Image: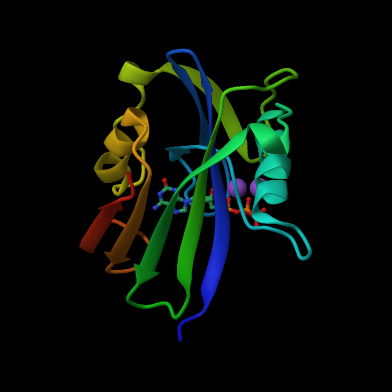
Length: 158
Ligand code: 6U4
Ligand code: NA
Ligand code: NA
């Protein structure tokens, strides 16, 4: 059985606006995305999501306000681990938006979010996310740069 590596990915929503962050360092530098990362030891996925949101954009959210919405599985032909990304959305938050070492956060109207400088799988599942359809996605990439999707399956759970 292949090893799994867990990640969180959270989208903060406010009416017709979505908060995205431009990644400033590490994996995916220069790419717009939600906020998230790897759970620490002894941390649940929800606890990790709460912590990563505050670390990366300054906003405070309550665990109960995070809606676990979808899971994406990413497999790379040159890597033994499968990345399992747990996607949350959250419409309640407190605190002030703050740029971090890792992310530059910006509010976008849902219809005007960036289409370039995003992961190539996003355009395949964002429509479901925006329509409120729960799903599980499976993506196989050529390599770690994620420039080419080799296989993709998205299972609609609703
Ligand atoms: P460090 O630098 O170790 O503190 P950490 O914040 O724990 O990093 P990071 O930023 O590497 O983790 O996590 C990657 C983030 O990118 C997670 O939120 C998951 C997300 N992600 C990875 N591949 C993705 C993809 N293909 N499409 C997507 N989000 C992806 O939309
Ligand atoms: Na991160
Ligand atoms: Na992080």
